[in-house]
Length: 148
Image 1: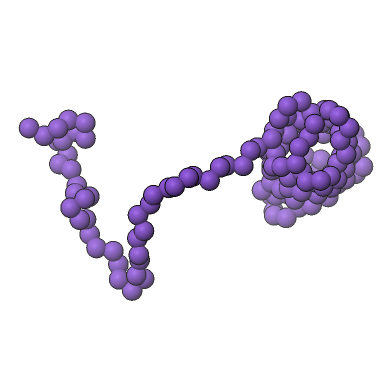
Image 2: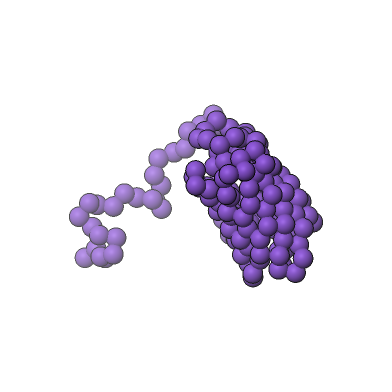
């Protein structure tokens, strides 16, 4: 069963391949890569799903894996555990078979109780040179070998 959340996406056609990030939330798809944004909808029944995905270019770059930049792709696939695979074609490029693999990405847990030094910077004054905590080492001294 596809669960709501963030997925790493790997996709390919005979024209090329790419990666992106896809968010699935309550039947809606959103996401992007370096050059395109994705949107659409999906429907899940047990371990099978169907989706309609649209693409739109947001930055200059190489051609899309379909040829045209804006397409509507009809997909069907299966999900197993934290991974889903699907395939389909775009209405605008019906001879180009599209395949994708989605891998569920758990959100990074916040670091608990991280202790960091707070450094106050003054833009009018450059930082001072080395202090006693950051002395340069003599070139002949190895950091692992104590001095005699």
